[in-house]
Image: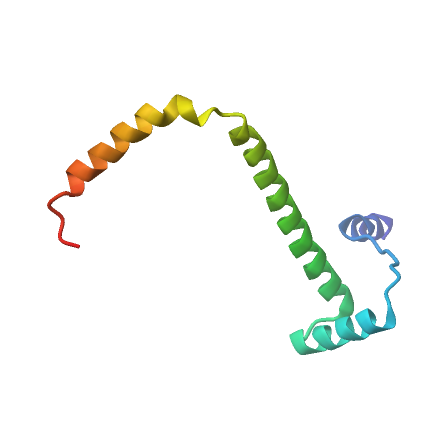
Length: 94
């Protein structure tokens, strides 16, 4: 029985948060509308927020990396690619 109890503890963590009355009421209404309990609503909201935040962090890091690249180093390559694309599509019917 102790092993099972320990297993349950490791799968989830209880926490307490403070919310304004209006936010609590909005959460309550949203949870009812979605057909989930408040706890599940908070889990879904936090997962969504973390996914967005992590995506923003990745974008920020990519922007930092690409911001260090001198675009002038690639001007000739871009011109050749553009000319090649023009040649490939010159007879296409648009």
